[in-house]
Image (cartoon, rainbow over all chains, first blue to last red; front, side):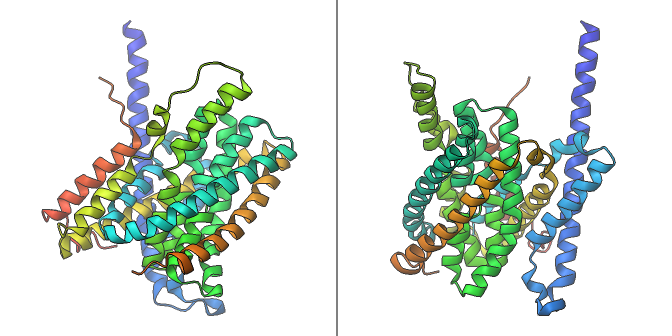
Length: 363
Length: 34
């Protein structure tokens, strides 16, 4: 018994050391990203690009990508990767973001965001499902990919995979595709929005509707402006809230139609999969709205929110695994890219109609 | 004892802990400058 316990203990302390070292690496890289942002902010870069256009999400993701390569090259990546917690840092940042947004804004934007989310999620989901069927992809991969691209990348992929019992490789594959497309979109979408002269609410709604992962949505919004960041976050979180419903419907479809079982999955999955941090976001917004957060604490909270997002962007760069993509061949990549273009164009039209015309958000 | 906590709730707990520290003045804007 003693011999069995010692390796388990050693393993556990090894895991803790790896986690702490990983976390320390992420924090140091976030400081470097912040330092780079400050150096470039007031300058003019080649091609007339103003330094302030290059906000911290870009630097953080770039530094993360560079160290992703370095850490893998020196074989320490696997040991410390448990400290790379994109989703955790992102969710902390989103809850803190709520402490700077009036609840009135959330209610105003949520009306448009719900309509947009319903249009986008159903159209993109079924388009991806249909197209991936035409390309002969397996049903489990089709379900994971359609959910990831129509709702919110990584967490939606995991939720869908649980419902349809997808293979582990299918999750890691779709996750890699999500990050590979979301990172460039995080930079390109704000540039395109600027060229098209989109207002911040419309641009924010567009980023929230078309960029696949919440971290990149927040990143794109941050680069475009404060209002864009707020609207993008609200729109994306509204979409995220549908994860539970889609996970339940998928479980129902696969259980009854694909596997031909008689028993139905429980509707409790809707609550189980509901992103609970959205509740935290609403509560902090209520605290702000009722004047319970004064000016100084508010400034500290806003800075902590930026730190949390910066840590998330560093992790996003660190977690990219392009090698997974090579394993599945070209068909899923082609499907994913076509659906991304469809998603981008449709989101632009829908966000323009809803946030520019039907429910123009006044902030 | 091995306690497992959902990442969503963990994020909410950490965020509220930070928020409370800011409200009571332990974390100041100057200290947290981004």
